[in-house]
Amino acid sequence: MASSSEHGERGYIPPQSDEERLLMRRVEELCRLADARGIPRATGFLSDREQALAAAAMNRAGCDFGRFWGGWDAAERKVLCVEPPDTWVLEPVAVLRLSAFGAQAGKAPGHREYLGALLNLGIERACVGDLLPDPQTPGQMYAFVLQGKADFLAAELSRAGAWTVRAQLCEQVPDRVLAEPDRTLYEASVASLRADAVLASMMHTSRANAAQAIAAGRVELNHLPLRTTHEPVYANDLFTVRGAGRWRLQSIGAPTRKGRIFVTYFQY
Image (cartoon, rainbow, N blue to C red; front, side, top):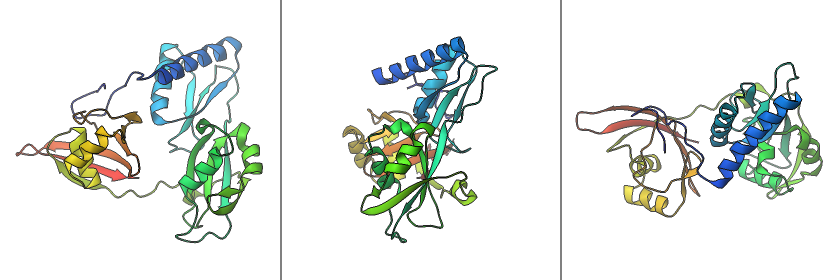
């Protein structure tokens, strides 16, 4: 995997699969069509990994009129809007307020239940962006979806897990929902910036257990399968461990006199 500097952020990682290469070709074609016809075009929602690939594809196609938008300023999943000069600005994202009947603190559908319910309606993952909980109302979430799917989802969504739910189009999301959560930052001292060493510290487990999770194919690094324990890590790397959670490596400090390295991270 590519890197930008010894302890800086990871650099651009070229496509690693046929699926990723296909995404880049589709973005290049989208740019050419939008430019040739003078009509804005948009993708579905993209992960941050897919956004990096899309940005590289735009650069390869000589396209400088694309923007990423997920419905709110700090969105994780975003749509690529390709808008040639002198054309209109796209509004590709709609918001649904998802409410569960009888929900209460500790007993309410969450991200997993709502996302599963939406996908069970037969739509693709690219149709759904971020899902944000309402901190004041148990079981209520705001889902950012593609504009063209909003009416269908609002009409068809009725269950999420064990709960009866309702989906309504929403014009404005409360500020309390859009406020970025206060992340608890943790600091750890690691022997090296190998993936197994850093992951073990994040998960509060042994290095052997972290290596076992990697060998079993349960770990992704920046949405790509982590194949080796000795993969070097960089600031802002995202670890996803199937069945355990997600961790973000926030920063990397300078080595101590004994050669250990302090890292700062948080768990989603």
